[in-house]
Amino acid sequence: MSFLQRRTGKPLRQTATETGISPSHLSRLCAGTRRPSWPVAKNLVAACDGNLHEVRPLCRGAC
Image (cartoon, rainbow, N blue to C red):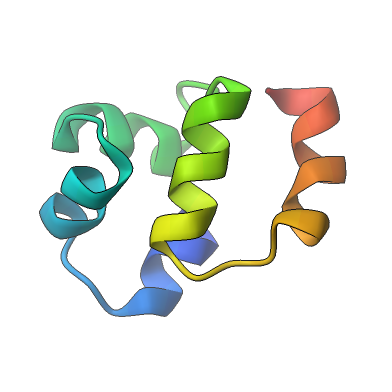
């Protein structure tokens, strides 16, 4: 998740707003101290213009 967010070049707060979560929650997701639910992961991938098909296998074990 951290890689996706950093790759956008957007501020964390903007990505959080586009994802529909708080900046503090996104910060914890990017730090790896929290795991996103699948709906949050999908929203984050969309906000970061990521590839859902690449992220889904990674989330199966972690989300």
